[in-house]
Image (tube, rainbow, N blue to C red; front, side):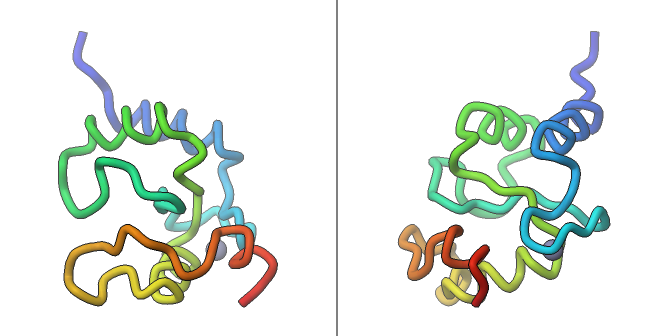
Amino acid sequence: MKFEVTVKMQELRELYGGICQKCGSSKNLQFAHIKPTSLLGYGRGMKNRYYDIKNNKSCYALLCYQCHRRFDKLNDMWKNKNPSKTYKHSFEEFLNDF
Ligand SMILES: [Zn+2]
């Protein structure tokens, strides 16, 4: 049977509560790195992404597009085109409002 990655990703989203963990939106949800994993960065394929999220739950948060951008920006994640592996602000700080 084919690995239905879109179905699997949907299951993951539901597991994470199905809404943005920052603002509660249910639109444009994405998984954001909140701690580095070996899979940091663009691409790498949905399937790899899925397993990385599934196996490193404490390293990801479900955020909407806007909150994801805010969190990455807060941490200058893409300053050097490659994602930073150090975080200036923790996800907890972000939730407590920045
Ligand atoms: Zn949000």
